[in-house]
Each structure stands twice: as C-alpha cells, then as structure tokens.
Amino acid sequence: MEQWEEDVQKYLQMGLYQPALELVDEILKKGENRRAMTYKAYILRSMEKDDEALKIVDTLLKEQEDEDLLLLKGMLLFDSENYKEAAKYFRRVTEINPENIDAWYNLASCYDAQEKYDISEKYYSKLVEINPEDAEAWNNLAVARLFQEKYEKALEAAERAIALEDDYDNAWYNKGLALHYLERYKEAIKAFKKCIEISDDPDAWYAMGISYANMDMKEEAKRALREALRRSPDDEEIREALEGLEE
Image (cartoon, rainbow, N blue to C red; front, side, top):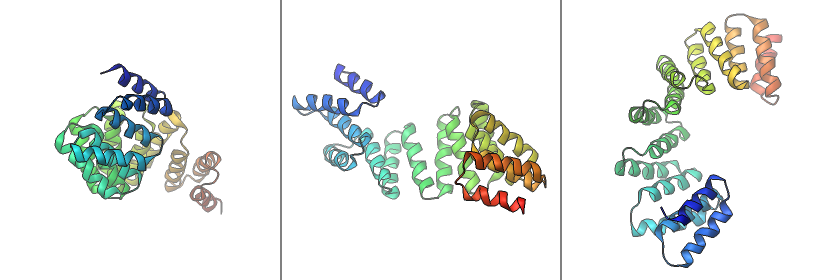
C-alpha cells in the first residue's frame, strides 16, 4: 500500500472526508489512477454525493469489472432504495468471491428492506456458515425468523448470538420476543430484563409489559409500560397499551 493510500484511510477512519478527497484529487492530478478514483467514489458516497460517486463507478466498471466497485455500485443503488438492482450487484460480488462478508450482508439487507425475510434468512444462514462466530449474523438470522413466525428457530439463533456475545442487548431482546410468542412469558421477561440491564431499551420495557399483561400481572405490566413511556414519550403504541390496562 502506498503512503497516500494509508493517509487517505487514516482520514476516513476519523471521518475527515474533505481532506481525504483533496488528497485523492492531488494524486489524480499526477495522472490516471484507478485505485484513487475508486477511493474518490467511496469518499463522495460518504459525503452523500451519490450522483457524483455513481458516475465514477459506472465509468470504471465499463473499463473493467471489479469486486470493490461492484460492491460500491450496489451500495449506491441501496442508498436510493433500488433494492432489486442493488441485489444483482451484491450477488455478482458473491459469485466472484464467495467469502466476501460485506456482499452477503448487503444482499440480505436488500431482502430485509423488501420484507422478503424467507430470502434474507438464506443469506444470513450463509453468513453463519462462512463464520459461525459472527454474533451479528446469528442475531439478524433470529430477526428474519421472527418475521416469519419461526419462533423456535429464532430462539435458537438468538441464543447462538448470546453464546458468542453475552452483552449483546438486541440478541437478548430477540430471545425475549421468541419466548414471548412461544407463550413462555416468564422466560421472556428474564430475557427482556437482561436486555434492559445492558441498554435500558424502551422496546424491551414495552415487550416486558406485554408479557406481564399476558400473565395477568397487571401492576407489573403497568410499571413496565410506564418505564417504556418515560423513555419513549411519543410512542402511541406504548401509550395505548398502558391506557388499556388502566381502564
């Protein structure tokens, strides 16, 4: 890696996009440089100048297919909510390099965005096959299964995520949801409490309140829902649930 590239990466790590762009432009003044142009496209996207970034990417892809550029093209299309087209580019990256984790994640996200959770489930399953130690992939797999009402399978995936990262608040929340929908309310409440210990998540307070309500423990339910509303005062769903218990 050349010195200029190391310097650009340092700027990017610090979120200093304008100095990074200026440095890349200095390199480009010296002559054509495909790597520098690729960096410029990434920087422009980070600066929310997607149209300019897309022009560069399309020009470079006409010259030669490139894994990084295909991934970036997919990201730019995803940014504009063109999920079907974005998926084509991410899928092409996985064909070139089946071990490209970013491509699999982005591919799954395209189908999450379209609420096609049966398809995103397949891609999250692929991610945990590539790396069984990826807690985020296990958690995302749990979410995809929850949306499909595969509660036992969702519980398994959430527990795998927790086994890898015991302080993974969202995995505890998803474990709680799976248990709640399986009508295992006491266990669900324990999971929601663990989530709250880690992150004090209003969604976990709300879900815990609903679990208590389903056990006909109205006082505990109201306390939990009040805590949820205190943390998220504009949430009408929480307010309505609390009012329903107070009638």
